[in-house]
Amino acid sequence: MAVVAALAVAGTLGSLGAAVAETDPAPAATRIAAQANPAVQLIETTYSGRITVPSAAPKKAFTALHKQAQEQARKGRIPSDQLSIAKWAFRKVAADPGKYIGAAKPQRTDDVTFAGTCTGWWITPDGHMITAGHCVQSAPADVRAGFATYGLADVTEEDVKAELKALMGAVEPDKELTELVTKVYETFNTRNLEVTDVKVGYNVVLPLPGGGMNATSTRLPIELVAAEGTGGPGKDVALLKLADARNLPTVPLGSDGDVRVGNTLYAVGFPGTINRDTGLTEKSRLYPAITEGVYSARRETTQNVPYIQAQTPIYGGNSGGPVFNAEGKVIALVSATYLNESGTDRQENQSVFFPVGQINDFLTAQGVTPQESQTTRIYNTALNDFFADRHSAALAGFKEALRLYPLHPYAAGYIAEAEEAIAAGRDTAPAATPSPTAGTASPSASASAVPDASASATGDPAVAAGTESSAPAAEPSIEAAPVSTEKSLLKNPMTLGIFGAALLALFLSSGLLMARNRRFRRRQAALAAPFPTPAQFGPAAQAPGAPGVPAVPYPGTPSAPYLNSPSGTPQPPSPYGTPVPPPNNYGTPVPPPAGWNPQPPGRN
Image 1 (cartoon, rainbow, N blue to C red):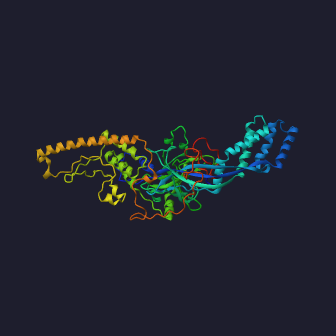
Image 2: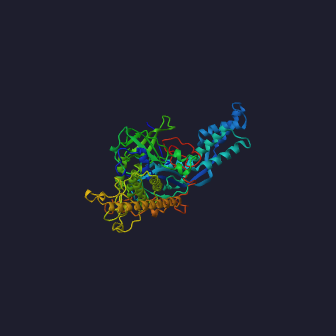
Image 3: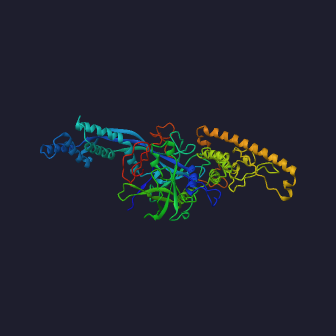
């Protein structure tokens, strides 16, 4: 039977916008990463509860065992020193702790909170997010095992110290005895552990300007709407909802027919192997990463659930992240990875993906329709212009995307790059000049000109009626409208001279305005302003149920609030908490590594 491991520790790609030229300067992976990263989010799942563990007391069998050990020493069958006698006895105890040790008072109690991370991705502008089912729900036994792993370490350590002191006094115990006693108390404490008042909460961690996260990153509580499955292969999908959100970046969902065996697949997410690397800055290691590999085969479980086997490398933390085809459509989510035959190590080139057809069926059952946001449409069009060196057109698009969604982590960086490219003379976008009749700037001749989102995206009647928009003004354009042969300026030299002088003046004023705007924008970018509040996501989008917008019911109930937390959200012991608890039957429990975000058994 195949052995797989879920990837919980732990998204989104917008429309590709305007058609890409046949000689696209950006490789598929570059374009997918640029368009997906704004919508790919780090999710924290936090468990809190109270653990109760009884004290250990020797049974009569333990007293009898101690006498047997002394008798063995008296007969010369084992050395007669205290260390040898203790090791002989505890080898027996470690094989069956319950036979020799019983529960007694006092009871030890402690409040335990631990967390882990997964990857999620926005599918609607108003805050619907997809991730893996195993990222948000686990079997009760797995949750209990998580509390044992992360809540019993201190209790067990104290028990071991006390026992070794009672056994050896001032004599230093050797490694074998220490390991035997540790095994005994780990087993006893885990078997007798009681967990009560368990609460689960979810946060989405907003990226900093330019991407990445650190301890100052904004965390917003996000509600679980529905979930299906607890790990692959098999059902493994969940739907979350962020309240009061609008204009969020989104990714487009494709269909199962959008990809075939042999195609290259691209996974985007937050790999735990990098997230825990303390040799990197905290911000840079918490930045979405893209990997690629071949679609190996389409499989099906004995419960008739399809899944994709691929050679795209994935790691703990990637769980729930989107998987794209070369056209930038989501065709699956990251679910699990195969283990080797001994079940001890992951095979990173044998990944398990939950296909998009199943995700679409799940969303239909929840009454949710994926929707591309105006922010994404404009941003992706601007990216197309940027990669094609049409920097003035890209600049206007990035500014509009930032206006629609002030929390956008990457638009400001592209604005700075586009301005630098324009200043360096690398802009290839066709320009536009004032109309001969109206005297206003004409639309750019670029095939990917940014649409006017000030009215269409917000639905504001005042904006639609022609009131002043809050969008940044477009850069002045100097492209002249075509002139017919009959009215050619060449037939009137004086008119040509006047027109040339006016054109020169327009060039000079344009340069001054652009230089002033660049200085202003750079000063603004240099100010590390705090994030806007959740209420400042940008201009209000159309509400579900409005004309042209499907109604979106939100089944499910919010997670229970956290007690002992004035803010209503858990306060993990480190900037991001310790790893997601639920160990599962796909891996062997191992002690978590030191440092941020150690991985839970079988999950990473």
